[in-house]
Length: 315
Image (cartoon, rainbow, N blue to C red; front, side, top):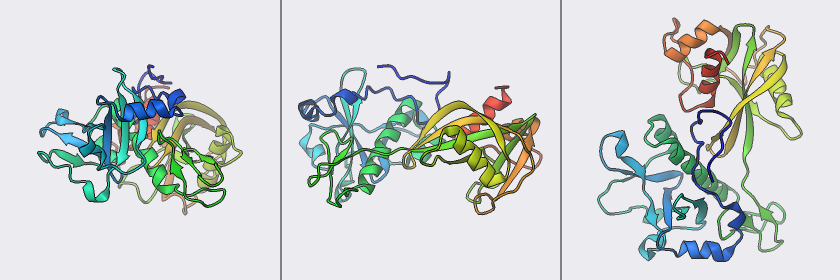
């Protein structure tokens, strides 16, 4: 099954080429057969860091360190849950699981390194499809670790055979992975654009404004509320652009453009360190790293930068 995109390009952490085979996840026989199939592969995680095989100093020397799941010497190193990720183009099942903390030394030639996902993305060590697959695995592993007890009765839950949900043995309630929606937008007034920065940002970096969507809100309502709360600016319209999975731990960034109906700033300094209007020319200089004040756009891996690039290109 070919992946679908809402853009001619893919954001970082999107573009997964696996067939997730979600209609077969509840088939215990299907999962068991693949867990014991010599062709099935598993991706090891040491806490939140995937195993990456480094074959040389060049970037092309990095690859996901897939291991044969049916090998008992490999399988005994993993803890539950063993998570079914999907089927690759050759019909092989791909899994992921955390390693036992005492069994994280993979031995061999020492070329397996535990590298965090953000570093892999920033350094472009892997292609988009591999990063997307790692994002899927990391988000699920984090979710299992943080959601071990039933929200209904408090009993300790267990993973389903596919590792894509948790089930309570006492009340039979099923618990599914959560994804937190975040609205992120470029706010425009004529040829000026509203950007902000938080204290945790790298020096000089300004970004599109963002905030979590609250229960009972549409995307447009969330966009209007967040911009008004953080900057005092009112927006009259919101237009969708694209979305990006953000696996830290499991967020969906929903990007768009907002049209401002006011321009006066009333910054909430508990949320932002600063916010200001930038001209289109300034925006282009920030993307190029030539802004006269040394101001910068966010990292290439972020949807915020892609929104800024779309504006600079006349979108």
